[in-house]
Image 1 (cartoon, rainbow, N blue to C red):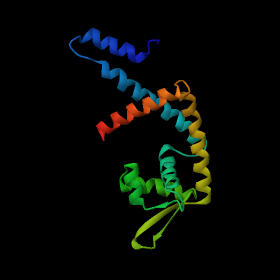
Image 2: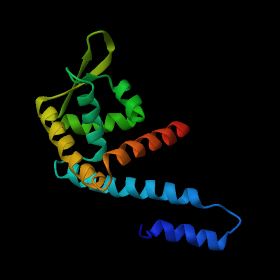
Image 3: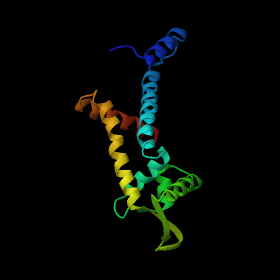
Image 4: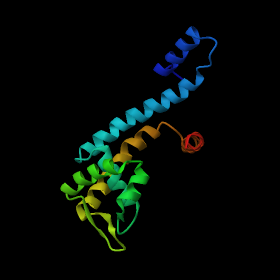
Length: 162
């Protein structure tokens, strides 16, 4: 294995603070860098389709819900960990772009339902497929067994935080 910038940071901390164990910095530093770099790649892919990450997330949430691709803003806010104000802004932009429609909830007159339009469905399907390309490219450096093991390890760490 070749040394990377994170290794150098950890070595510097070992030199400067030999009383500390900086090894977690190696793990979390790499997780952070991978997330940031992949996030940048994903922004390029989605941006080429006129979507920001936030808009992609809303459309993807509706798409994953299955037919009829409809959810309440409250359900989407909970899934995306957004305030109602943050959700409203995203929904406004997507509605102006004709990617979603908002309609009264037939079961609760005080509530709304958000649905993908045909254009929104087509766009999110294209964006998801395109976004998987760079992810598969990066993961090609790992064997299938290593990918599964990495997924299991990250699931464990995430479980500790959530």
